[in-house]
Image 1: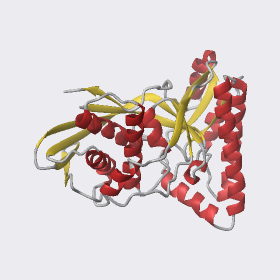
Image 2: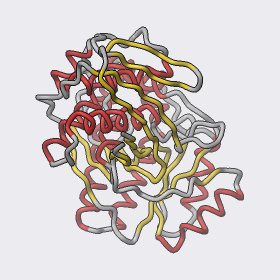
Image 3: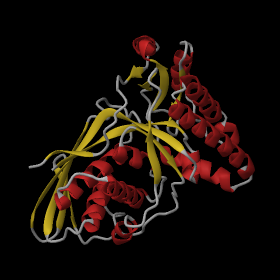
Image 4: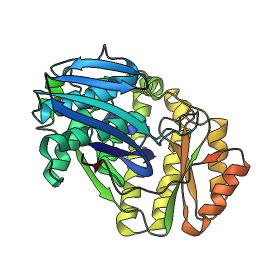
Length: 355
């Protein structure tokens, strides 16, 4: 079975989402694929990474000793196999990705996509049925808890988006709800309360993504934000978070009303809030490349741009009238940046081949 899942970009809601705030996350037309083979056996998981292999029993309870490059695949396979009652079989997983075709990381969420793709394939091996709404929510929950198990926390917003597909509204994700074992993660999928639904971008707008060519690690920035929220600047961080909630809700309301101007205003508010996070929480989001990417986009009529994700590198997103997207991409190229030339992807995690 080949499961695939799309890459993602944060549109609005970064940092606030780690404290159970809202966010809007979009998936894009680059995908990661997980090829899962199942056969009768003794309950062994084999993960292939290039010429190397990682072996674990399906009865494994912890993944902290799994090599980092295989940890998210291992957690996804183990949690979903446990949740769907697979035992007396052997599973073999290998992956391939279109997310980062160059040398630099683009920030499209590889760990989220590989988790969502692996869970989708294992679920289909176990049940071989198409998703209904209930099954979809259970599959999303399995991916979220597997990802938290592998990462040791996190909101899971990117995992929900890669699992569901489209422009996804999320609220109230509890990043502190972290399972310690595979059994714990599988059990939590039965009672997960994940608040998310899809919204539609106004038809007049297109989503554009540009890579800066500089990679950035998210975890240290999120840790610094959390420390500020718990420390002397906690009240300032809470006020900042209220502003980000307002930006997210205004964006969602603009989408639901088909009001492109309201959506662009909300995008601009989120951009200004991220620019102040350095002063608020000692988290510098903007780099020279991100400032350039946003300035180039903002110079076009009816366009708004901001960093996507933790900042410090990776990528920026822009909303622009469809007729301006070619001009925006060319201006980014001329400024030394790398437009990704992706579309908004409505299809989430899915199975491509049943072998």
